[in-house]
Image (tube, rainbow, N blue to C red):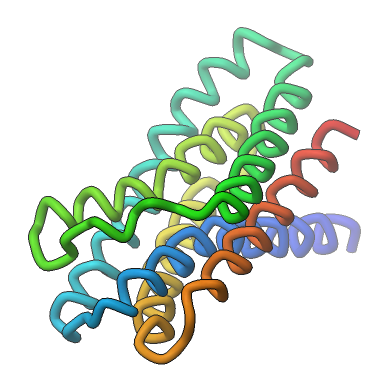
Length: 186
């Protein structure tokens, strides 16, 4: 029974982290969606964001495993610190505002740049997760799913809502990552 609760807790943690990381895609998607996005472009953006939300944490996990082996018992504190700093950065970024509205989402380069910009956080979280043993396949698939879906939701919301909603979403995602960082440390 204890193993089932641990597994459920791990699954809930993965889903919350995936949703938190997807907030960045949601908030920037709102900004781009306000400029007007065709369905074809929205699907291309959502697919690329999902792909990058899988690839970036995989790279991060590989780096995290290496760093975790080097740090040993200190890996827990390093991982928690990384998540804390990433969450704080997301909150500050939402307060200052993001300058990503100049991306031309109609070009492949623009879509790649957008996808990379909202997936960098996934790399950092992957580094933290790589220092622990866990279900990495489920983790990266959840990150990809949430990143893709939340970018599509953001693009759709951007058509009818103001930009400030996206900033609140990014701040909420940052708060979740910050809280998980503190949980890892303490």
